[in-house]
Image (cartoon, rainbow, N blue to C red; front, top):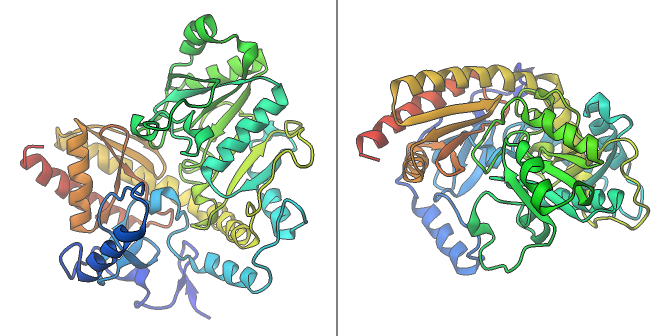
Amino acid sequence: MSAVTPLGIPDVGPRRLADLPAPSLVTELPGPNARAAIARDRAVVSPSMGRVYPLVPARAEGCVVEDVDGNRFLDANAGIAVNSTGHCHPTVVDAIQRQSEKLLHYCSSDWYLPVYAQLCERLVATAPAGMGAAQVFLGNSGTEAVEGAIKLARYATRRPNVIAFLGAFHGRSLGSLGLTASKSKYRGGFGAMPAGTLHAPYGDADHIERVLFEHLTAPDDVAAIIAEPIQGEGGYVVPPADFWPALRRICSEHGIVLIADEVQSGIGRTGRMWAIEHEPVTPDVILAGKGIASGLPLSAIIAREGLMSWGPGKHGSTFGGNPVACAAAVATLDLVERGLMANAASIGTRLLAGLHAMAARHDAIVDVRGRGLMIGVEFADHDAAAAIEQRCFETGLLVLTCGRSAIRIAPPLVIDADRADKVLSIFERVVSEVSASGL
């Protein structure tokens, strides 16, 4: 029987991709095979798919991604916080394989799938105690969870309006796009957004009462307030300490549903199962997605006791709660609860300390913020952040921009101290190089 590492990964020897040195670049970037794949892609794929750099993955394991030319990259974005347990964690892969041999699909909206209920039980057990005997609906994606939550809030309150925040990203399907306010380009060209959506500055709950309730909507016309505990696409922004308590007070006073969009921040990423657990409040709804199934498409609406009053047929999904994705999610929760959540807290502290020290050495870094393995590094302007993102790729480190001028550091939750130190070392070298270039 093979040994097991502290993060739950079987130790089967040095030939595992996860154990190989990374970065390790053996061709120019993109290499010849990558260039060929990109050319084929551009001929047939929708131009709406905006790629950030010419990465063409062939396989991945742990925190290591290998492209079609054999170049190995150190992953510090986890596929936008999706590959929570690392790439192809053997426990998750085993759960997927075992489930796929028994049942690939049967519509959960019309029949009873045991693994669907099993996952819902697990999610209810993770919900803050104040949510009581919560109930769960499973979907396919974050944007679908947002759409369903808005439907639920409107149905439960019989009210039309929803308040979101500037800088928010809640998805790009048309209903959720009305809530999204991180970049104007997401809305451009699509006509009028769905009626009834209002926005306030993120972190400024007073604006809701001072401006929105005073001038734009009566509070008893508001079905829900939706916010990210830490803004993702908007810049990995941590709100002030009084923000969520004020939202909770407003919602409780006026019968408004408080929705915590945890699509990016949930499933252990901040060192707790839910980022909202860093706040002294309990929301009415928690939305999960991205990292919930370690890379398989799945999302969840977790609603407090009594809120899901809608009857049969009021909401459903052909593929939501697919049994293979549910099996992956159950395995993911096992891993997160048994060590990866604690690892995110520990390594996140290490990365934040290293980045704060780096900021003291480099004037180019304007701010460092975050919780656990959800960290934002702010630069002076968009051009500087974009140049750092590209140069990191060219060096073999995979990061992403967010907000106007920030880089997000969001590696898989399996990252260890050595890999974290490698991230810091490469990132500082890139910051120095880009700063010397004049950006």
